[in-house]
Length: 273
Image (cartoon, rainbow, N blue to C red; front, side):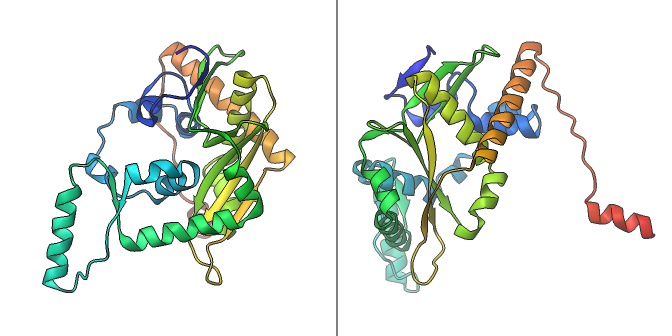
C-alpha cells in the first residue's frame, strides 16, 4: 500500500490490509503475541451478526444516507402472543438474505433520540454538519521505524484541520476512565501524527461522546479534547508500542508467555497470615 489518503477502501479491506493500526498497537501494549494470535484465531461469525449500536450510531451521525442501506429497523412485535411471534419469524425470514443488520424497534427509537441529542449540542452539530470525508483511510511511512502505519478517522473536516471521532459511551461520567481503559490518548496521538503526514497540516482531534444511558430523560452529549499532558503521554505510548511492533516484526519474535500475578489485596493478606 502506497502512502496517501484513500476514499474507496471498505472497512473490511482496511482491517485486513497492510500497515499497523491503533487497535493492533493496543494488543502489542498488552503482549506482542496477541497480534499474530488475533490474525490467525477463528472468528465466531454468528456473534458478529448481533447489532452493534456503536456502528449504527456512527453510520447515522456520519453517513446518514447509508443508514437505510445497512440497517433495517423492525416493526414492533407482540412476542407474548403466538401471532406476534409468527409475524416476527416471517419478517426475519424475509430480510435474512438482504445482507443488512436488523435492529429491534426499541433500538431504532433509542438511536434516533441519541442522534437528536447529538444534533442539539452546538459543537457536535457544527462538527457533524461540516463538509468532510468520513471513514477515509490514511497511510504513511513512519520515519523512525520505516513501518507502514494507517488510521481511519471517523470524520476529517475539509475546511478546517480537525478530526472528529464519535464515541458511544455507556455512562458519560465514566468517559475520562474510558480514555485510559481504551487508550483514546494513544488514538489521539496516532491520528494527529497520521493526518500531519498525509495532509502536511497539524490537526486537532476531538471526541463527540454520546451516552446510551439516560440522565434526566435525555441522552447526554459532550465534545472533548485532551489536555496537553495526556496528549504528550499518548504520543509517548504510541512511539513505545510502534517501536516494540517494529522490533518484533524485524526479528519475527513475538513472545507468548506472559507474567501474571495475584491481586494486590491477596498479596497484602499474605503479610498478615
